[in-house]
Image 1 (spheres, rainbow, N blue to C red):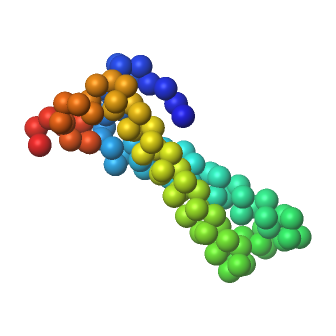
Image 2 (image 1 turned 30 degrees about the vertical axis):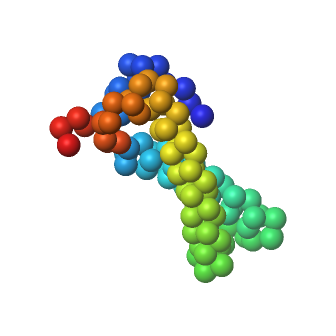
Length: 103
């Protein structure tokens, strides 16, 4: 889990929770780890590249791996968001998750 200073968290929070979840859960964990795991599994199964990239089984395994790692990455991102909200005092202010007080 990345630790943000109060100034850094303010900037992250201003971009909003959906952006944080997408960048951390999907781009930061789901996509890279999912593809990596799918490639490693394909190599262990004896798949020949680049032919394996067009195989339906490989594509399905890749989608499954990306989905699983995105789910776990999103859970971690949610925990990270909650920790920083409490750490920097936003959880007690009754301000929305997006960082916008105008809602």
